[in-house]
Length: 521
Image (cartoon, rainbow, N blue to C red; front, side):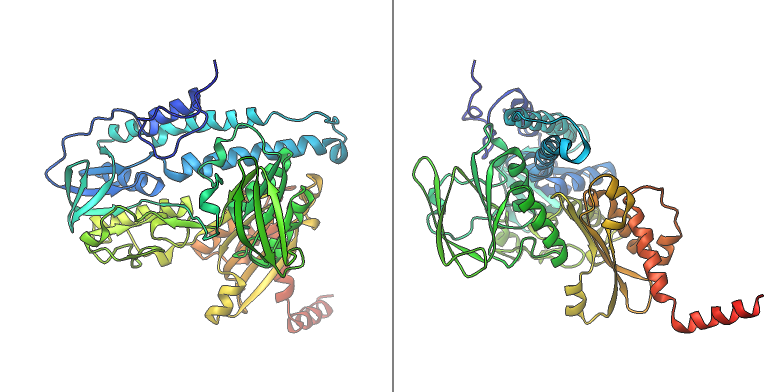
């Protein structure tokens, strides 16, 4: 019996999960249960949280664990983008694509068996759906009800500076947290709105591999998925407006990623403008113009699927923020360093207000916001104190923490940079993963670490060492004192410390040692 194409029409979700198999049905029962009966609201809540993504779930759980009366409101699906359309499904796809690439190259790289047959893309996506459903109870509605939280499913709208309405129910609060996240932005490309293009909210519903995929956008989402689908065997073209992909990252890191994507078969067209998009019922036609070396002045590309990955739009619609006296712009809700909005009773965290759209930032901000909102800042703090790492999960990965060279220049901060190549790292060479480097930025004339960029296959697993060092004021010399097991790719940090010591070994010091060894005979 074929699987239904979508959930029943009365299922409470704006985004249908395709196909509606057992895994997706399990997911929906967990994160958007049909027929949910709302509790009788309390007279007044200590905290009402709008949005059940990472930021909202962490906020609600912490506050309830401390004994506060908490209400949690979600209009779509618990778990937010991360569980349903972001971190979880994308990493399942990326790992499967890496396995396909390893299988195809095993003979050449390691003398392994020669793979001549194609893989099963449908099984890849079925695995994704199964894993997502299995993970979902941690973020599920029933779990948060079991924590003593009053869960309301529906649209939350401020009806006053200290009240929120949900399905004709009024929730009065002492404090509220807006954690409604963001969604895929639709760029103003003529014709795009009239086509069935994909975003991260729909691409993970595919069950058949597209023969030709065109990706608009060279940021993390675009590069990660372009590489993955190329490894699955799709013919992939990535169109990007900037001079190079990953424009917010170190230019040398972007160059390594570009080379890796091209080695996997991705055609990258930089400095291109999308003039128009159309769809004839069978394929997309994308009209381009541009002056870049890979972008002719005018050209037309055809593809079977079109993935748009050009940024995020904060979810501020329908909240009634004007009624609550909460200032906002198309870029999101305005907050101060303590995450408080223009309404002193209301805080905003996560992608709806932060320029750093990462799950781990949403988690960290939730911990600050609860303390700042409920305990007058005791145990909380300011966002400026957070040391935030970020990772792009291409292969190799790009991980960064602290300031960049561009940040230092803009802030007038003098820095010294130590760079070490992975080509000299024994484990990277043994693993056939030598393409990458570590850059450590130091306050000029010292070993104090102010930033680091790591390009390596497992950079996301390794950048924590630099994050801990910056957070706790451990200098590069201190990092070098730690014994790193051999052989590991993490030895790159010790080698950076050795390089700093060698640089710091001045001519005056050399003269002093030369004198000492002449005397000490």
